[in-house]
Image (tube, rainbow over all chains, first blue to last red; front, side, top):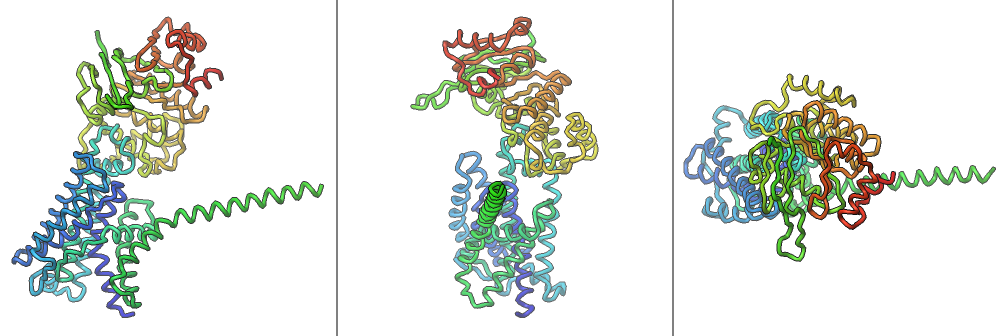
Length: 309
Length: 270
């Protein structure tokens, strides 16, 4: 396989990295299965593309995409905390609502950025060459990871982690868990929209369907990364999300190269997640069986020893 | 009179009007003086845990007044009341965050009731305090500040929870059968530890227990609940002359029933 394909996977892994970190925040830290993500990824892309299309500054457009994502997360959080709608349903509701909103923002199902100035053309101006997208992606991922690393160790960040770990406990220590959930969901979706905004500029268009299955792609990345890097420390967790994102894009690049039709990708992703989720169960069952057999043989052997007496 | 905790005419009904309606608390009035340590006993479903939960703010009450240190708190949500109330649950897993370290758990407990901002979650000075406080537990945890709490045993976690519930010096401590899920030896250790900490801070305490022996030896008062009412209020010196058998007899006289708390009977016979 050619180097350019791997370089492409690296670029994509880094650009989608912020999305995976967003999924890490909601799914892992906050322990909240947030499906808003499918909608907020496209929302970020729609906002950034629309503004750039209208001649806006691409950096400002990307920033506003982040803000839009945060608002989407807040709304999901408000549905859950104030209206007491179940987490899963709150996310689905906002995701569906965002479909219409995204179409309104874009004005059409597909909006192209041909010949518009994006953050990537800006990178070309500063002579970053072919490494432009990778450098920008790396900068984004480093910035976000460093920010998360610092934040999750502050008083508020710790309250957020505790909300995902043991809500009853942190409430009994005087934390309003509605508030920490809102913050976590806003942060997670802001990161997802950030990624969406960058990806749209990278590929040169926003598409209404580009967020479909994003939650599963994010989850697959997180799981792959955790299996490879581990979760022992906070740094490892963050590194796992980014590594997972890159490996996931490499796997996708590989199967496409091997001739899999791109329309089958979502099926593949779903299978990866199913296998990854089921793996611990199988391992446990196999281990249990082996242990039982071992113990059974021990007992049988001891019995035989007695009989020979 | 100076009262730290005052419940007046507190009633709590679950599922009012429905087929599953259950009156958990009936017109409860209970006053605790500062430093009072009150053991709460009663059969299953007597309302012991509900009593603790309405004080902590987990459930809203239907009628009545709850005031803490002179100010009414019945309208405050749980997290707002938590500034002044430390709690330890029966399940050792409920009192700590397993994926976080010992020092992080303690640091969160130390900030009980304070605004949490973007300052560092654990400071160097606090680590010193934690080491000192943990060494008082005598479990060797002072050398494991950065170990995840999930690695600790149930007894260690419960001892840590007791420390977390009291480290920010709350006005009131609520213990909900906090030694019931531990093996007898560990339960004894955790209880001794709890008594030591209560004595050190002079904490006003409500302690639900199923152990009648405990109910007569820990603290200075014993109340018995039955069907949502407080049916017996034992104070010193009367309490010191009571035995477990007297307590059982009292219960049968008052309720016309035998005590049907399985665990309580087990410990009463043993």
